[in-house]
Image 1 (spheres, rainbow, N blue to C red):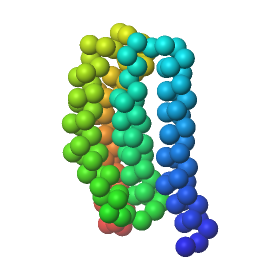
Image 2: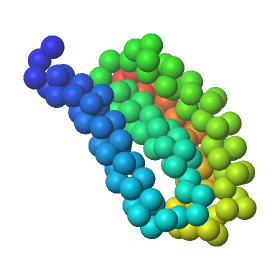
Image 3: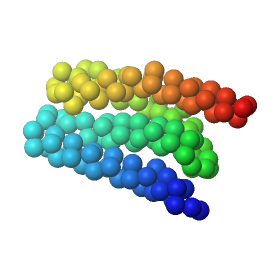
Length: 133
């Protein structure tokens, strides 16, 4: 493994997930400090994991080696995420007026139904095009 591959591995599999966890922790503390009624801690964590997983799958495809873990992440994004985010969107639909955190969590859950499949489709088409050249 050369320096370029090592740097890609560290950025994709360490820096991006850690930065997501740090930002989630900051957001978590901000919601606690603002004393939000019924804060959506779990919902936001799942949203971070799902959108972060989507970013990791895209970056892995272009800058790293596909693996069994990447395949598991891909299948979660394709099959599991719509189900999980559907439940989140449904549960936050009646709570979206409570706070901006509820509102944007609801929006992020609903928008995944467009962003997730579209991203995976574009990724598939780009990879297919690159392999045929």
